[in-house]
Image (cartoon, rainbow, N blue to C red; front, side, top):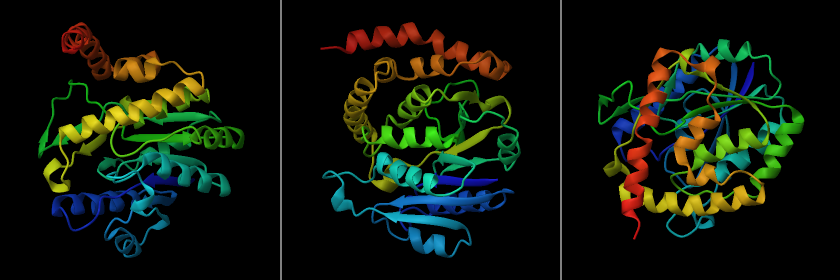
Length: 286
């Protein structure tokens, strides 16, 4: 099986903990029994290409100078994705995978994907096992974030995916999960939540190590949500992808066959909090 695996790395030398996590991520990938090439797009990030050269792993490297980003931006998921899909189309890959460099998934994922019979397919893991500040969060607490997505795409769907990217902009943090699920909807892909088959562990970065904070996240999310709404309107997709947030995403990819006991209680707990969340939003309005 040939896999193109998109990932972007944090600059090296800023956080020893994060450097170690990124190294372990690559070592985890190398244990998988598949022909894997990393698709890596960086934005003048220190030490990344040197690290990859020493890692003994196949990779395709793209660097986008930071001056090509909007002022103050650090990275762009839409640029990463554009580079990856172009390369995916140009080569003979069986799967395209997106993930972050702070996640760990069992090598059994290759076996699971190899058994997939659908020509146009989108598999992901939700929710992940979240490690924050060195502590595991409660198992049945719904976590925001889809940090692993595997696409099996025919040539026709790959070209459609690439065409859709021309309407999409994204910079820094936020709204990428919403975009991926909307893409799966637009391309009419077979959705599968792999949660009951395999688990994903995510180790969250510390804000202070990269001069980020919650205010930066909120500002970034609002900007990207504005771009995303324009994308949805142009491509005749539901605006609820932008307004409904994760409540709508979970509804869109809900499948009875994907449920186990844990996931059932996660869904139940998530939607039980919906009225409370709705009331809070009403009282926050000016």
